[in-house]
Image (cartoon, rainbow, N blue to C red; front, side):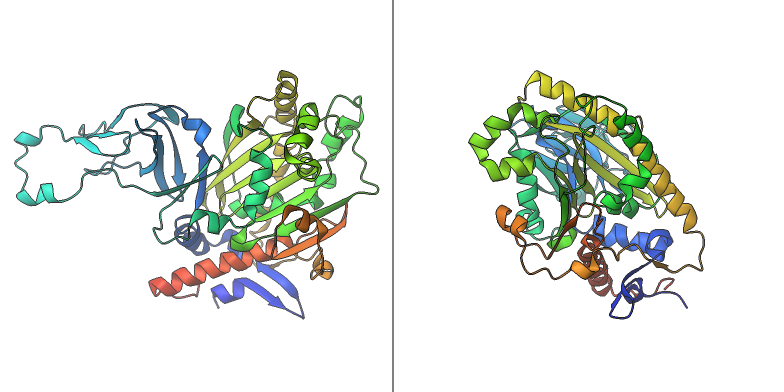
Length: 443
């Protein structure tokens, strides 16, 4: 019998929290995700610093829909569907640039930076019916929101306000933005690649410290052969350290832990200024290791450097990744140089760690072809620590996560994904109920 949505995520006292492997391999589950997650709620699109000047733009996707993010002549940010109203062709083919107009190469219809239709080629000779002028010809706008310089878009006009959707995750974003009085910006280090695996493998891995010592063993060994000053991880000792996780509303989550050394990170160059400006507690959090998930399509990873990852699912077993190196605006030149070097060393397909992760994602996807194996056992670590009554770390940040687990450095908590998958299931269930669709795969 085909699985139902209710059977894809299971929680009970007998077996604990279980995830059905069909969520990674079934094309119909993928269709649900695109329609009700990526095309149904807020997606992180990029940074305002990518469109600093009037008429700057960049292109990306919300789910399957191509979009243009622009700043018009008056400075207003827009998100527009990248499809001509005439015959549907894309009107912008570049990843980024500066343009006052977007002209469809098919029939020459033109639009300004705010999406307003400014030309229908040879309209006077077109013998259009009277009703033609009563319908709109502008590029279709997408709901857009900005939080602390990060741009979000949604195809669903009924999504909750952006700040409500982000909730307590805002405190984690603030720890990134407030590293400089001027915020953060994209710097050299942008990349894009594909991997043959489900997008949720990346989402899980970003807050999974359990894999590090086995997946990145060659990286760790290489660092051990270096001097203390060569890398942020060279002096890393895990003996008496603790790590923790926060699970937030709306599927967001975070993993955090101590920095390997406060002397070999880019922020070490401005530590005194940080303490004076934001206080000792927030400065300590800024200099810690933090990976956060912004459900459903992005993660920030702040360890060797600061990376933004935005993914676009292409199929149940295929995902596009766009990655960005971020940095505090105006940081010292020495800090910037160290940041870029450490980014190159750790991240991206050319780095020492990312290829290991991609190999694992693709290995998992090949393993999912064993169709008789139904359930993942990868959500259990940390379960016995759920329900901790107090979390001083959350109190320090003034947040109230749905759950928090703090334990030994090698705990490798996996319960941080429970709340995410509950929300995953809830959004799909709401969408199916709204559309009158069946919850059984294959209907």
